[in-house]
Structure formats: C-alpha cells, structure tokens
Image (cartoon, rainbow over all chains, first blue to last red; front, side, top):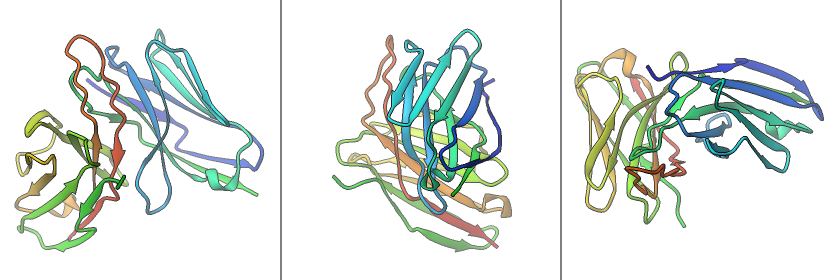
Length: 113
Length: 119
C-alpha cells in the first residue's frame, strides 16, 4: 500500500545549526515529493519540492535530496532561525492524472535562540 | 490573486448531525483535494475533484462525500457525525494539469481549514 514514514517526530536545534528530516516512501511509482511547513494555527505551505528525475534541489537555506533506489528523501535546513520553528510534513505523489498526496506524520522542529 | 478560502472556519456539531464544508479554489485552478488533519492520524487524503468529477478517493467511510461545481468550487459533506470526525478539514487546489502518460506535478495550495468539533 501507499505509506510515507517520517523521522524524527520532534527535533530541537540551536539557532544557526542545521536540521535534517528524513522520509521513506513505499510506492515505487511515486514521482513527486513536496515538503510543507505548517506553523501553529496556520495552513500548510509548500516550501520546496523535488521530482523523481532530479537527485537534489536547493533554495537558499533549504535543500532536498532524493534517492529513488532506496525510496528515501530528506529535507535539509541550514543556518536555522527561530522562525523556522514549525511542523514539517513530507509527502509523495504519483501525479499521473492525480494530485493525491500521501503525507508523512510530521516533524515538529524547534529552533532555540 | 486571492488564495484558497474555506467556510466556515469553525463548526460545532453534535453526534448524528450532518455538516457541509465549502472550499473556493484559487482563480483558474480546476482541481480540488480534501484532507483530514488530526493529531493522531496526521494528514489523510479524503478525495479529489477535477472538472466536476471525483478523480480519486481515500479510505474513508461512505458518510464522507463531496462534489465540485462548474466554477471549481467544492463542497464536502459528512453525514451521521461521530466523535472521531472532529478534525481540521483542509482543502487544496491546483491548476489540475492532467497527464495520462507523463507526470503533471501540480503544486497544491492549501486553504486555512475548517475546524470541526463533534460533541
């Protein structure tokens, strides 16, 4: 079946440190992997995504890597800031005639000043 | 361009009642998906609509239903409410580019959600 595992469930870092969140997907037909950030009481917002034909993508302090063979993808945040504190969700989708997203269980990131 | 909107934002119902939630997508977006968010189960896919047709459905009982109108606005209905239906219901819209033989990579934008409490 379709499943996305996400680790860790909570992550505490000092401001300026890096944070890494890892996800593993089960359906090898998945080809699109977005990451969403959800602040308390707010809607999930897309922060970065990666397609299956790309191994790595970077946007300023955020990067995502994808290992299709291992069915594994990760979010890397460098030089963390207190405003990075939120819950982060990874997701996977097959995208052929569907927008259906299978979400991981979320990682609560806390960045301490 | 206005974002995805959902109404109402908060709703309190009692067991056995039914409820209808509404989602207005971003202008020009043709696809609307619905998700249930709970602390225990996270974000779970309910169903998606494209051009007034249900394109995909998640593993929820038949008490959960939805529809999409010609202007792409969507509604979801939950009948015979149970305590376990208490959740944040999120809708997301996308351009809805379709691909039968090639991936479509539609970026989805979420609405603020409707917080449903069943007493």
